[in-house]
Length: 299
Ligand code: MEV
Image (cartoon, rainbow, N blue to C red):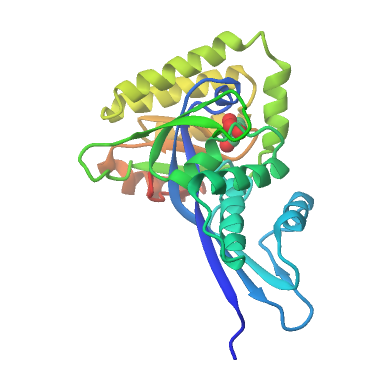
């Protein structure tokens, strides 16, 4: 007789514009990326085991909160972990989905979001909700945090379409710094510099809405990304290595480049003219820069 088992998955995310400022009420532009976390829960025959991509005290805490008794758990992730690509939101949602399946529940999206946000809070203290909202909703979204109120969603969402319909992927390359970023520490660093940096956070928010107004213009989007990177440097979340990766990308023909996620490490995203993508990837390979071009936005 086969063992009872359930499987669930969730994508990662990339923030095109607006990280950090989004924690403080400004809008952000973000989308799901076609790299996934997959979770399998199965009945344990002997001693239950955990087959995990990393050992991390926060993951242990999250699992202690949610995992049913006497099951084996297997987690696989295509996402580089702790690099700003939403690995914790993706893992939280995949886990919440798998546990709901295991328990025979069919939660609605609002319930899934509430549960995955609660779990994501274990990984980093004060998430704005943009990561969880994007990995749940898919596509490309404008997200703006709402006042926290019991039972209400963390933010207001607007779905954006890229022409032609159906949305094509954006010619976006992810450059991995190889250094993990600590989201809680970076959010705390920004918090400590407020209210002095509030005018910069407001400029970031205005830049997001300007970029959304001209979202079909890929060159303008690239410029918005590079400008946004300048502001992220000013608020202290970039690093010399990230700056060097942005400079590499722009030198290799990117229309714009910036860190994506919390910074302090993590990934850089670079936007290209579609026809320049193969040459850019070849140049990154030659320079020893780890680069990937996952489908973005993904559903
Ligand atoms: C992390 O992906 C994005 C931050 O803005 C934190 C958050 O919004 O929760 C740095």
